[in-house]
Amino acid sequence: MPSTTVVVGSAVGLHARPAGIIAGAVNESGHEVTLSIAGEEPVDAGSALMIMTLGAEQGAEVTVESDDQATVDAIAALVAQDLDA
Image (cartoon, rainbow, N blue to C red; front, side):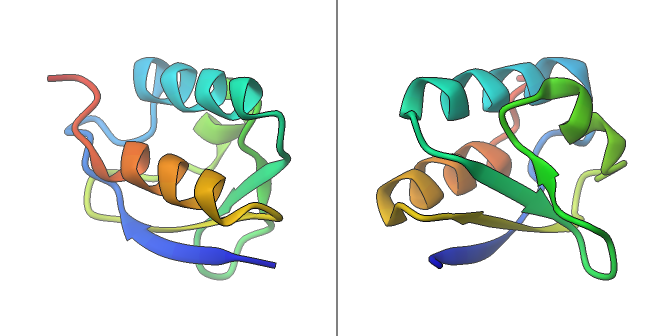
């Protein structure tokens, strides 16, 4: 399954606004996507609440995984952006 690891770019980490943007993009993609940080269980990236449970702060490494490489790339790009800017 395609995956990539990316550094969280949002100044506040993956909290409400960034998580909502990412979850919306996942739901629009039509593919299942998971996010995880090292040593933790993956969470459903289609749910902003589940994304927030990661507790991923700015600079944390997050692994994005899906069955579709283009979706992995798109979601990884969002995780890497400062979505609060």
